[in-house]
Length: 87
Image (cartoon, rainbow, N blue to C red; front, side):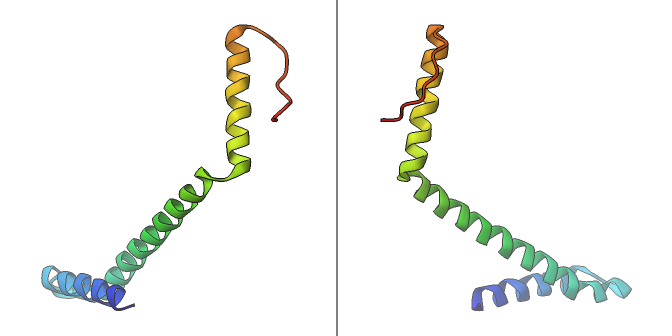
């Protein structure tokens, strides 16, 4: 939470510094939007990385990859026999 608050305050200070005149009122909403969008993107990236790590060892995913590999090999050999067996 403190990192998010520091991130927001940093953007707020940056926009207060660069915006002048009547546009300064847009500094607060703009800092909110950019801070929340960045936070959401980082959380999504963290979730994606965790999901990819779990999928590497997932038995169903490994079985699907083996089926696809055998189907590609059968297609390259020119055989039209379907690959149904996983075991």
